[in-house]
Image (cartoon, each protein chain N blue to C red):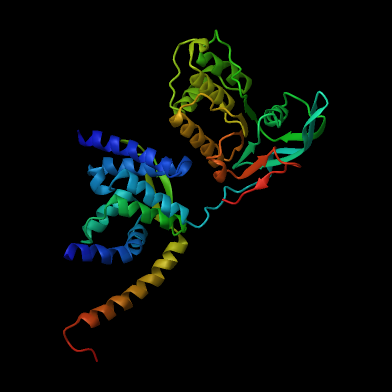
Length: 112
Length: 281
């Protein structure tokens, strides 16, 4: 199914997408989920997202802090660390190369 | 069920499931708070967003188990240092040169069969008895929870908190507030009853609350969960991991093996020349 395949694609790069989203600005779990959905990456369920955030945090690629909110309980905000930014810069390039090669492989024209 | 009700029920399930997976203390609270916030923000059905609570808890537990060791909360100098403690009762040697060092952010378990001197060691650490030889050094405040609650039957729980709090520099209001918070962590809401009218389990909870009042740096707990039901037993241990995460040095006398694999040190007084084994975690 198309949706299943898309979910699988996303699984491979979700951590990078989350890192990139947090590089654009500090955010919290649901905020990241909404942003990624807004980018057309489909819904990212909490059960998938929070484990990724946890993994990134344990790897010290992101860090978190609790911020009191005017209404309701405090919220856990995440931001990219210097290590996270460095990794993202590397992987961004890798991904661009890989995506281009997949594009070539899938193209209708015969590869050179 | 209303969406709120569904979320609350699912969060309760998640809390229990996490504890069954041995995810508690700091991680437990973080996961719960974040999931609660997510459900409140999104209004999503928890089953759609996270799946069954049991599965989500298992997934997280697996993640944490596979995680590179979280940086140990900087194990510093010993808050409690026991060196060569010897104690003899009526000519019978009970403690024969016990050594134990517990730093802030560590939990030590004292184990061994009845009569090997576990409670005696804690009483010596608490300064209630003197060793025949050796020394005990405590850095910072000390909280001691005796095996049998030392309570006054004709006083209320809050009055106990005020009395003990006064000894630790807390105002009456501070003592009551802190006591209520500690009690809530053990799933107990103190009421106006005289302590003599409380059940054994509730008296033990008060006993634990009094030991922890005022956030002492060193906590000595002598099998404080007798009379606790299963859920309270888990609450108690969760509290122990909290204290560890907060950087306290905690010593627990225990007969129960369940939690031993998670403590930092095990002092087995049943063995000759008892020396605390350092555990990796």
